[in-house]
Image (tube, rainbow, N blue to C red):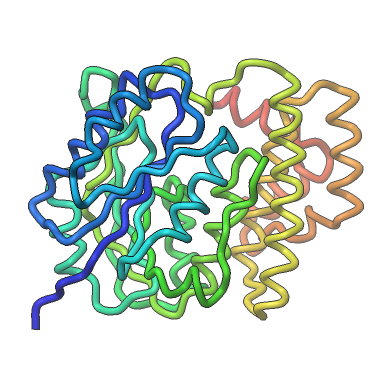
Length: 315
């Protein structure tokens, strides 16, 4: 029997007047039509509001306007309003392939989570790089994480289609007023899922723009990002223990992510964070089951800055 899945597509919007029309149109142009678009206008001050309001008459679109609260709050609002069987998140400067929902509708067989692939594009829609992966079907969460960790963009929220029921059952929400909110939630969703599949279909166009929120702009912001990753790490570690899914690969991944984050800090902050990592026994979580991993673990314990200076020098 053919699926007739309803998708809820959540699009947070904040000052993206140059990109939002292309994003929304890419959803409206889907070859599969059973969906709702939930647009959360997160206090935009440019022409984004005007552009969004042009879509008000479309019955498949819900437009919510709120004061600026950040990406996490906008996504969380969308999750609460969603009525579909499955949820997707699309960032408002990105766009999707016209067959994404069609392919997902065909491939989904009651998974909690299904992963699809992306490509980086520039502002002229030129493909910068594609990221194909090997498919897998209905693995448990820990097994799936062990596969996904070998690829790029492990915790990027836009790479997955989620059964809405798991957000309700586990009360999953993105942590608000933080950076790297995907890192703080998606790894737990993956390992705590019962059935995870991945398809080697590139359906998402990930725009690389010059003034993106992900680009470094000032040191204070970078410092906050680092402390946010530290808090996410603590949450992920504790939550995985509570769930009894304390996997070595998962622990090593979140530890590596945190260690890498402190490397570019100024000397005083770097020393403070290095002490905090030692106190939390972060280095203990690194895998050491091969010679290279043992060497890496040893060097990182001595000096993350030195290790990554060597690695970056090699590259």
